[in-house]
Length: 75
Image (tube, rainbow, N blue to C red):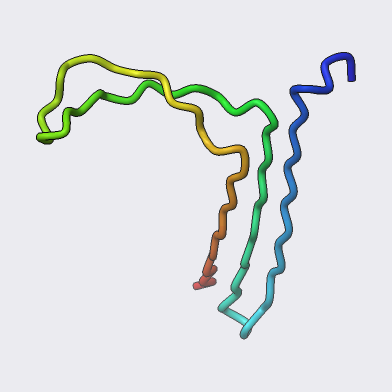
């Protein structure tokens, strides 16, 4: 907690349900928050749509969310 400007948060919730003896379903939702998101290198494109060959740094979003579904079959 020495550097409170670089806080991060990661929450994962999931539920699994047995639909039958051979079939199960799992649904998960993950929420990630980063106060100082990373930088990513992006190609610079002109207004006419042609690539200039240069790159610029862009900041990623602070909040990301992921939804996953898993279906399990037992043979």
